[in-house]
Length: 298
Length: 286
Image (tube, rainbow over all chains, first blue to last red; front, side):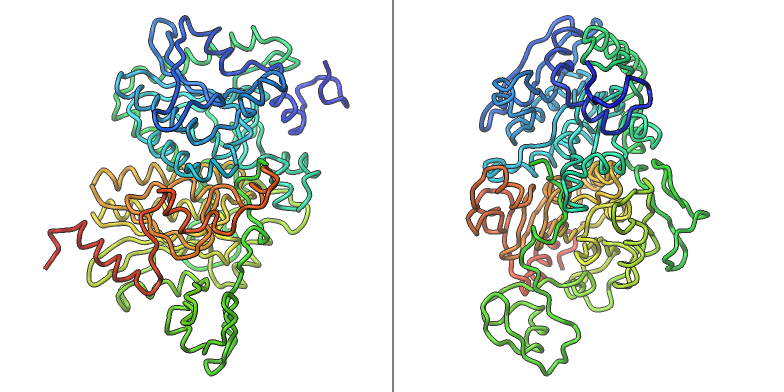
């Protein structure tokens, strides 16, 4: 099936082609990964404060002989399921369920695996009243020094703070045609240029594709998809993710907790692109480049 | 419905600034109560309307009134933003926009940071300036906040952040989002030395800033009437297709819903901070 409608498949996909693939309803979802690549999966429910959010899945599972904790956004395959799952956009109780599982992982020493697939955190009145900002902020802070290995995989859409709320990780992996952005291309186009129809331009400008983010050093690895996209061969995609997770867990297994946290600190602390000049000046100066994680233009 | 990290003037309706060009002997009409106010009186009251208590927006430099005279020492003033994505804009380029803003405001970026004292008690501080691209959070914003937290941790002193922001800096893409994680990892250092982070939320405070460090401080204070939230009001109204009540996302609303500790008028902030600093540092009490 040709999603983009204007070209035959090749490795030269535009950013917008990848947006369409990342949002494709036939891509594997969090529950597919939990059920297919884990040897056993027990879903756990509820945040113990308000409710259970179907937009975010949590649980424990056996992976290659080891118990792991799992958290992930869950989109639906059809309209009915999407309404039930709120299109993978969690309310605060979803993020607080995730927080419960983070602490669970720390208590029992389970590595944490997060599957990112959301347009963003749910923006409505109820979410604001129940503290959406606080729920996301707490998760990010807790993940910053959670004393177990964390692996996050962007399996579809990585939408803004709603993605980062389960995305602070020792290894951040992206499926080849997934996207990860600070705002959806439509929102960014509307904010920057007051024209949501310029979404494809915004998608290109924000550099939201896996290869670009890998080149910038924010993403640690890319998991290849079948030639025509993950939606064309779920089984192959699941297998690729399984191999990547095994490799990432093996890399992190040997580290002491102190070394793990030190690496995580250094990794996030280094993300940014700026210059440090001795004197006030307005022109960029390449010689004083101090950013690490971005390809700079100076 | 997905634009959480928005940055538009329309979202923040109350853009009332007193004009610095107006001489001291002038009167102005308060935009909130429409009463005629003597400008000098307004200035002396830290730009809080003496008639109705409306809190006008003040610049990062003006916020230094909170600290002991001449105690403020600026750090990291030489950090300059880049255009890491070579951002392809449909209108003015990011690099050009930065340059124009820097020239207009005479500042390098949206955060003013350093150390100072309040009634002799030292603290590290970082103050956002909404005038600089809506205090959107780019690499320099994140780096200055992270360094402020590390500085506080290193010297064993509290951290005060004065936060207002439209959210992420779109033109820095995912690097901007990752500043939320960067500041959070730096805050773990402060927690490790048992020093408090006090977050002051001022109008307006949205997006990635409220969804990260500003909302997980040990103590959260807001100014009366400040708009505080995750998604902008317009985004929510578009999502739910109904008008939101005027008190929605105000400081008072946040207090009522348990999201912040207190709402303190600008004139009482110094006193409140001084009490807090003493309580968190009992060994320093004379």
